[in-house]
Length: 399
Image (cartoon, rainbow, N blue to C red):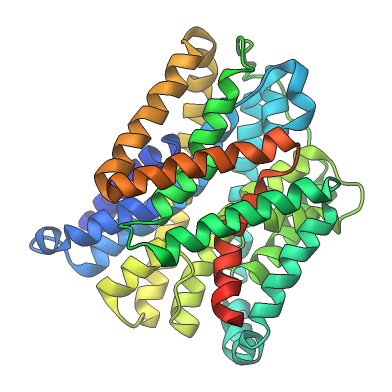
């Protein structure tokens, strides 16, 4: 039990690192742990190494809201065209944005674990029938999100550019870790570089103002998140942000703060459902589960129960770490040189891309960064950039 607890803490610390560092994803660290597994398995069992990855993955889903809130934010002149968490940041309420996502993650994880027996039953009973419709559901989700966009031509351009880039990086070239330069460029460095032309100074952040939530709307948002996550969790290439937009588009009396709550909930629920998919249908929906499958093979019921226990304990630590570090960021972000911080992070991620994916990967990273800038410059939602995964998957499934 002591070894298990220490591995859980080690995973939480890794999750803090991946969550707070834009461009460094849990999939990359999971693959590194797998490559080093001959060394780790000399003093750890495969299950304990899996515990490290699970706790890291859950902690990451809590912590990654901090850089997405405090980094990449524009000034007040362009605030209406950006994400709700950035608008709150510019009002001095960045901590509220983090707190909303954390509450969503906690509630979402609680209800996801509570509904696990029902999910296991439904997946085992209906997944074979559901699997035949996956290509059409993926296409329908892409079309529906395109339909919700007001600037249709601009959205189509973003989808085409990111889709072609995804096809080239995932199939046409033998890139090492192709998702790393692709996603880091589209969603990480592009956001940071664009923010350099807008941000003058991040205002002083308030951390002690009360947060008021309506009980019924909160529950409605969480259950909508659970429904959307249960649906998209088995669809490859669909992101948490896209699931949140689909869920919020069917809710009435929608408010931005409940979107942030839903996004936090979906982000964590999708990770839990990834482990449910591993246990029920022996399929991986994210990189960390792929690595665990290689370590453990088939997942037994006892191991699955250990997984759920680790998820709940990780959630406890992650929530406290997130709220504490959000306060630290709130104090220090207004005091440091924001441009220097952004450029340092972009340089660090560029070095990692060159190390893991080579010079060709660095080229794709630069192109992905340019394509990632296209969406906000054209005034369309960034989630259309997920076509980098959806289009190659559809291309593979239909052709």
